[in-house]
Length: 96
Image (cartoon, rainbow, N blue to C red; front, side, top):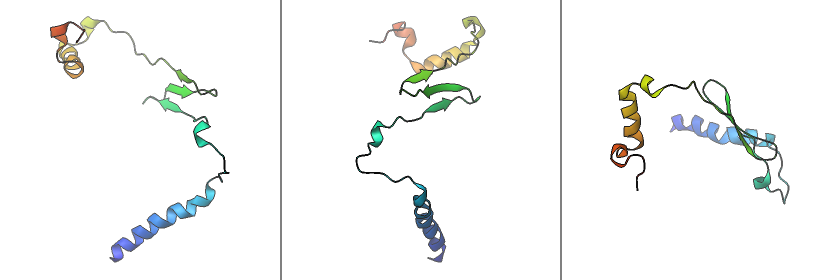
């Protein structure tokens, strides 16, 4: 029982201690109409998507170098087809 006392005290104390730092909300504040800032980065820290000031999403083309199909190993092509559409070779690209 004593082992649970400290974690429970921390779980209750930390949110209440930081609640004073939150901005006060006034009646009538519509939080859903606030523009939300969004930045999505890829692993190399390059910008992929960003929401502009008017709320529109701006996409950055993140394309690697083009590779000829003959340069992609057969087992990689087969793995991609197996993941995406196992019936690909049966329906030639259009699956009814």
